[in-house]
Length: 25
Image (cartoon, rainbow, N blue to C red; front, side, top):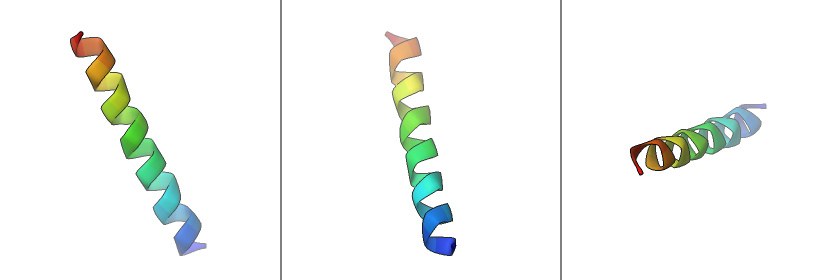
């Protein structure tokens, strides 16, 4: 369970990073 949450957070952070990259372009 915690493993899944950890991955989910990683994935969310990754998406957030991509989003900010694209919006700054």
